[in-house]
Image 1 (cartoon, helix red, strand yellow):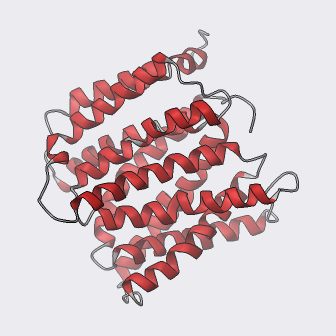
Image 2 (image 1 turned 180 degrees about the horizontal axis):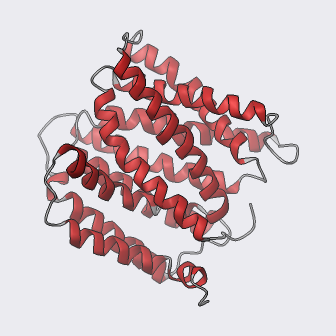
Length: 306
């Protein structure tokens, strides 16, 4: 796409919904891991989401690109499909065996910082300004305050450096896929969401079989949880993500990653009785200040002052 990003009230609502949804995914994932291994959990949620979205896409006549797509467009779609779900899901599942969940949370917030320089050079209308850069750095500091210094403590495990690289690699996957998604020609949102999930399923299922062997036979509770993960944070959230990236741009989409740690902490306290850290308020102030500073122009337009 060559047009500048268009940030509206709908864009802000979708980003808010995504932050809440993905922030709550950690709770549901913990339950699912009681009955499934990590790679098969990734395969199950992507596979379920792919089947569901394919049924919806079929009812719409399998529309995808508005004009005949080139081979380069199809190659880009395949890369986006791999980097949007299959590869980062597996990297996180493997990496979190060796690092703290706090470090994993900080690495996801780093998506915004990875997107900024890439979008500056590769996406029209996403120029990196001093104000925007300062806003994202302030927001990232807020995430670090929320997670705490324990996120960076080492356990001495020999595989911990590789685990940290895996988490950063997952964040890089999300950032690169958002940039490539924005650069695709005009495309049907539901069709693109479905194709990306199908590509992810084709990749992750055989890898799960090779790495973890045949899937364990899950109980009813695990099947329900996997279906929920496939329906809400995978299928529905993937559709929203595509809509946000294609309309408001990858830089705006990366604001979601600042919300995820906040919601995971708040929901953990509300539903699991986990203690709320004293740093939560300061972190919230920093994150909101960073978002407000980086998106000041969009907020002015939203409220009719610019």
